[in-house]
Image (tube, rainbow, N blue to C red; front, side):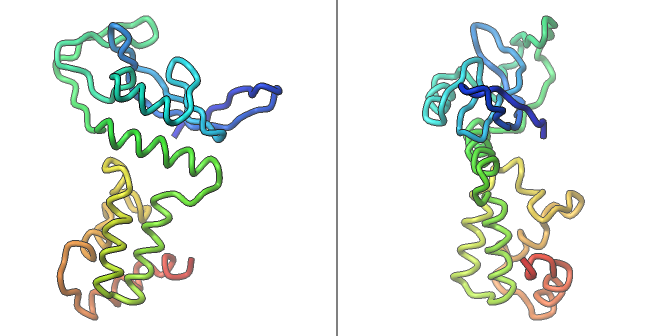
Length: 185
């Protein structure tokens, strides 16, 4: 996560986070999309979230570049014959929206998911499992393995609770022990 800033209209400093993407302006240019706490997004022009979604829909902001296309980055150009992309554009839009919420002090989709996980661990009903599944699916796909803060574990406990029909009391107790911090929030 790249911390960035910009000056507001009255000279105030507006905090932001930079996210990597491409601008498709005739060619493809690797750039940092600035997402700011006032809800503005800098994608080679400062826009609001709705305008940003329109730029995405028109192909101005992309997360993938066609094979064979040249990519520009700070006056360097390289070919795209073997690059692999893993962030889907719709998931990137969800990340931008969630980043605005985080910067504005609102609850993020990950925090909502952690709360749903705590509810499920406390009371493992079908309704709570359904809420947990919905909260987990609201997280951009490329960020889902980091929700519980253990990159190595890839949110195994969350996925286990969502994907398995019956969860034994032993497994549930193990998850409660391993993720005690979730229950204490």
